[in-house]
Amino acid sequence: APVLVSLPLVKRHGSARFTCALKIHFGSVAMSDRLVAHKNERQQGYFDERLVHFADAAKPQLNIVDARALLARSGPGLSAGSEIVRGVNRIILCGDMVATDAYCAQLLARHDPTFAVEMIDRQLRHASELGLGTADLEAVKIVERRV
Image 1 (cartoon, one colour):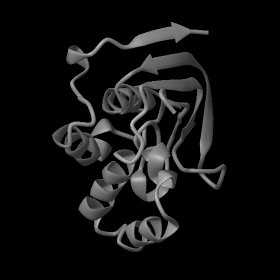
Image 2 (cartoon, helix red, strand yellow):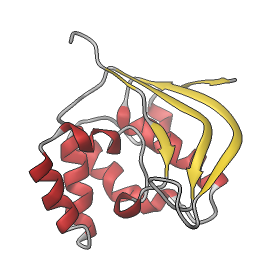
Image 3 (cartoon, one colour):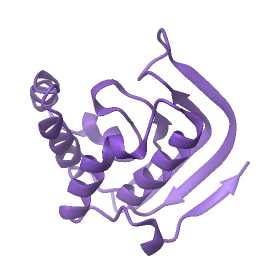
Image 4 (cartoon, one colour):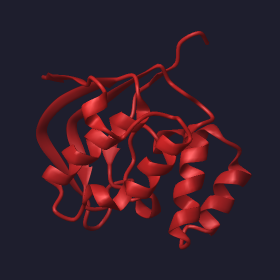
């Protein structure tokens, strides 16, 4: 396709700790590669690097994040301890998936006391090093629309 648009949500997610623009592409690679990453998920550096490499498989020109509500505390599904935080009421548009995750991680941290942006620093740093985008929010323009 000439243009790829990604539609991630913001949520907590097991070993990845966070799902948004980078993690959504975990499903863009072969199942065997995903299984190896999960098998080694206790090696956090390995898992974070694989997650970023998988994001490199699909580079969207636009990320549209539905952040009207967030899945906090636990995930990826509704399970014991998870919480849907309603009333966030934001739609985020960004052409940079690393900046999207940096912004949305800050948003989640404001609404989930069990999450800190530092939990995904390795992912953001590695993605920036690979040239997938920037985690420096001062360097990009993010358009936010309250709904």
